[in-house]
Image 1 (cartoon, one colour):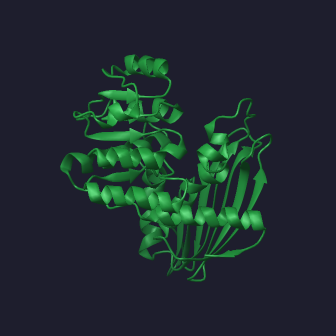
Image 2 (image 1 turned 90 degrees about the horizontal axis):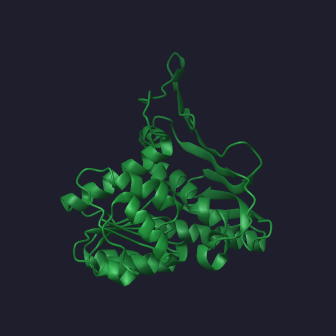
Image 3 (image 1 turned 120 degrees about the horizontal axis):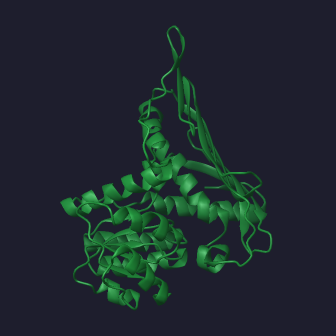
Length: 329
């Protein structure tokens, strides 16, 4: 394995987990800050620190690459890695627009290598427990999903690539919205959208939004309402989802599932085994285990075509916010 890009997500999540996984050998890390890369490599006992991306892609002893670079680099680096014969796990978003995402998927299909987008919320224990209720019909027809990912407000003293439209593709909507949209639509098996309405709030001193509220009207008559933001004035972040069905409801976090029974209301909430890791660390571990199982067993992952649709919906949300109107999908 090799890791490209050594920001917070790589240092806090990917490298600590991968360095402890059986059957995995981390052999190379690369970052534009070469001094930082050497320091991190020494900390995790990683033998090589290539000078640039091309040296990583040309490394014959690498089976797979984890891409954790700024968002605007994801599609080009993923294509280069796939064309070099590497399996790819790329942090979200897959690209900044649907057209670029399609090009990455085409590269994966022509190379015969696996491509996975790091939608770790799908692998959270509570999301995995809610999934069969959402997909299996036990809650009846799901007619409304409401969700949010709100990060507590932290004053930005020095904007980074994440706060610039050219490098991030947008603000909170691209940063948190892609994951939040993916989770809600994944739980409902990616229903078709009829229209999109979005309102954004400008970030203080930034050229991107710090908050976005979205409403997706579905062709089946249902709706998905999602809010994401960087500016929640609170002591902690808030991340939740609730779905309403004709015969039941489900929520996370905390996980709760209720449905109608012959004798009245039934609490059918699954009991999750307490773990030593928090939900997010556990989700990343499960995600990487799934990716590596496919790589080691040479079981090619299906192309993540749903990411093209998600990026199309994000573009429609930005258009709705700019034009201040509902737009058809």
